Length: 262
Image 1: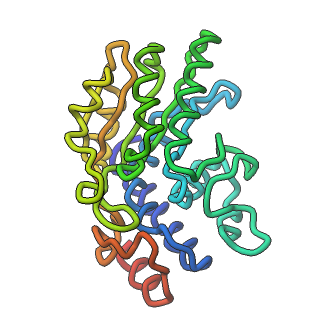
Image 2 (image 1 turned 45 degrees about the horizontal axis):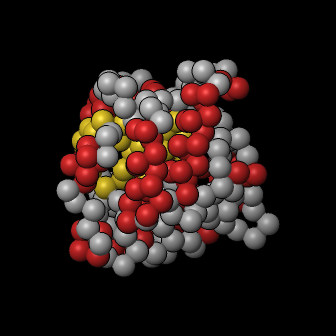
């Protein structure tokens, strides 16, 4: 799928995120909006999804941004469209954090930061043992990379030769209580992952061509991480790069203004 088509998909996904956040009066809309372009690129141009039994695996380790995965799975017709109306509502089907029992396309339960990354590494190791060509892609947050389990996994992957594993770091430089670079800095992030034995790419996380190019880059037999530079709340001007949209609620007025922009 070409970049223009991916932009259309991403815009539709963002609209669904705004609607979900508004209906449920729930937080994390900024976190979901920052990684829309990456998921659109993955699900519409990169992941092998058929046959389903041999599909590539995607795990959203920053699972508080679950709205972006739900909306993308619906856009890709992996989940039924009407299910989005049940997000984070009494008696609903879709929880605020990911639950593997929710339905098709949710590969693991996640929410405790750092765990989805390690689960994905275990899957990649299992695929290696089975001599299958299935691949694993895991998205982590930059704030999430403060977790020790991320760096334990970063040591494990090269040791096990997991060249079937790709991590994508959503670097929007905003977490719940401030900027990661000011709270517990992970920089220089590229050099650190290189030192751990990973193939590292950097990309504009809102440029579909740049994302696809980084994901396609030969990792030379190493696990790969794409450091994607993004903007929290991307696509809605008054949400962009604003800390409050980690937890702020989408009111009627916010919804109207956001959908008008989109």
